[in-house]
Image (tube, rainbow, N blue to C red; front, side, top):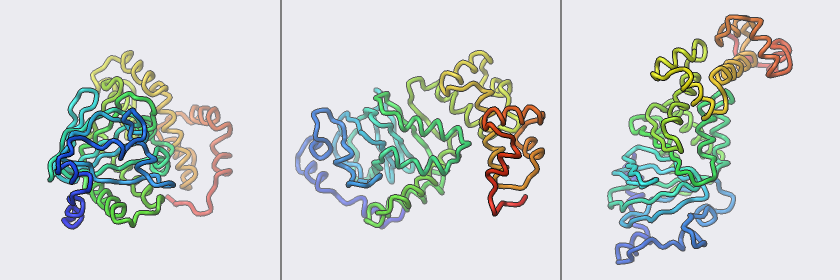
Length: 327
């Protein structure tokens, strides 16, 4: 991160100065109007804004609290220790922590050189990121659904992406625009977050999470990522071998945590990819069928019609675009 920006973020705030002057506790009135310590979006975001940023308050233990918005913690320098569900979660320089709405957590005191940014985000802010990820991205579906949950289940996503320079550069640009007051356009910020989200989807191997059943949800994420990457040749048998799980156990976990069985998830991905190729290229239907992993053309036509209530050829004509990418 640029030194000038770090120096700006390092400036002692009025709240921090009061703490250094002897105020021993966080002033809850700055964050909430209620008795329960739920940080209120109406206190933290100006009217009409979907996102705001502030530097994390240092020098004090931040007691257990919740938010009625999605919080994303980014550590610019040093580290920050959260306590979530009784577990210490240490966020180090360059790492991101996505906290679901109403996830209760507390934060241990940060030192002067521990500089962290709180992104305070309303759920609808992620609509653009979700659209950018594409309708055929089952992993994006899963992550967005996790973030949109509105009950207190202690869910978080911890991305250890300090070495992913694209994410670091995008975050720095976004922080700069927001802290300097040049980030008034929601759309620009949403698009930037959308790009960050896309890179995070490519970095899922660096993610740790706490969900109601951490192991089963990690299995679900691995399954969705496998289908996303290997949909042309993916098989449940191969996935079982990779995860060292018996087929009946893996099948049960997939259904429980995604709402679909393996075959349905794979078919959804293949059909969505086929639709993309139909609308964006001039590839013959027979080539598209092979490209998405179907060996039996008759079977493809049958499942396509079941889902879209029309034939592939009629679907292409109805959704034809004037300018296609010609392959």
